Image (cartoon, rainbow, N blue to C red; front, top):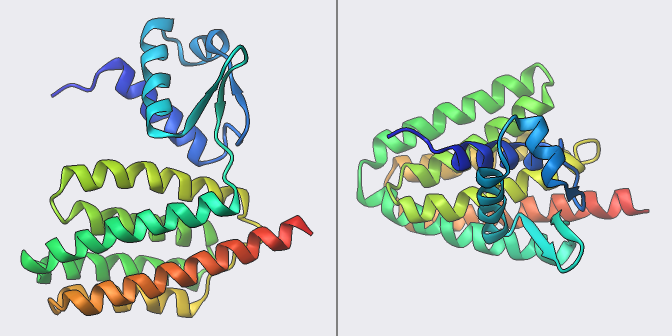
Length: 215
């Protein structure tokens, strides 16, 4: 099925927000955006409404639409919801073809290791995002994937802002490998436990980075 114009615009705006091309707190001007994207205002308004419903944009009365800004409390809340969704995905994965799912996730871990070997932090971050996106997508639940997509955009926003201070290491890669191996072995409780531990560690890294750039 062909993607609609508002969907295409919404996808482009999500990417721009996630990768810092539109900074947190920025106001989105309808006329300027329409010119930049080469679209009419009708489908643009629909796309912006979708992002407002997803929580990526906020409407301030008599002022306009603005990109959200993530506070520490919101980052923590996001990780709580992300962990719940990814844990639900793990439950579904181990009931299905967990061997194939585990192999795909382990392949993604190898991508992280390859990026780490050459010191490519951007590629490491991308591989991290893909790992979690595939974990949820492989569950086969469209609803989980839809909600998770917005949370991953917010995650990417945080990592983009903190890219100079956020650090990942061998332990970070090992956490992903542990999750993938548990899925591969069909051990749901272990996969969920490792996923929860990884989320707590990731949140600690992220909030530590937030504190370091606030000083």
